[in-house]
Length: 277
Image (cartoon, rainbow, N blue to C red; front, side, top):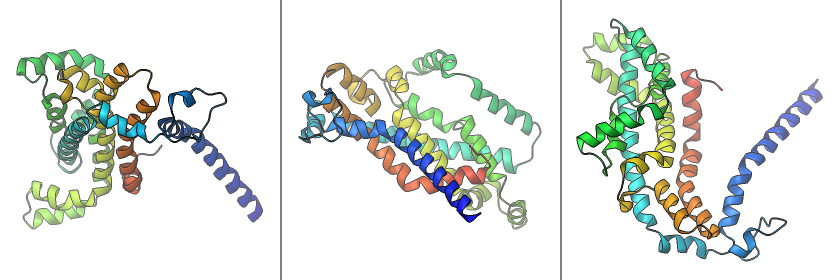
């Protein structure tokens, strides 16, 4: 019996290791290509470990494109978006999970229904709205909407987590004279750190990799984010694949590091909110 369990575990772990290797191969290939010269990239059979490491590809990125400017723009837009999404979605989720008011469930279903609307449906009306407001070629269209709800999925995720908090805490706080905002700020948010971290990581991944938003609303090249700057770099340096892969690695690195250091909060947030894969 124990031997069967051991064989089963070995089989499962071997299968997971194989799937992980398949999934990680593209990332390993990007890193490998970023350290190659153009003459080594298209060799047959492929050479995974370059014989001549070209670290100059990384330094050339900073010389051939305004990488630090794009990085600063991406950090600013991403940080502001995370702040807006976490605050607004947690407020809305608190209202749906912890307050009693007429039409709450119907409105929540309506909010969830908005997830079925593709972005292409609202893209043109949003562009016309921001044009009338005079916000084109500014970061406002990329930041301000984050402070108005934070997205239906984030609201749903936080609401599910808030429902797991014992209602006795809210009742005791109200008896002690706490306002609803104080209950939300001093009780709910500290208890919801895993779910908030999950929302923050998901928002970071979306905002950091967002290409369509900056492409639509930003016309000044120096206001572009990394995703937009990398696309411009592709247009300018189509044949310099080593340098292009080096720029891709530099863009991907912050996202990998953040997920690596905060993955336990990410997983805990999904588990405790009742969302399972």
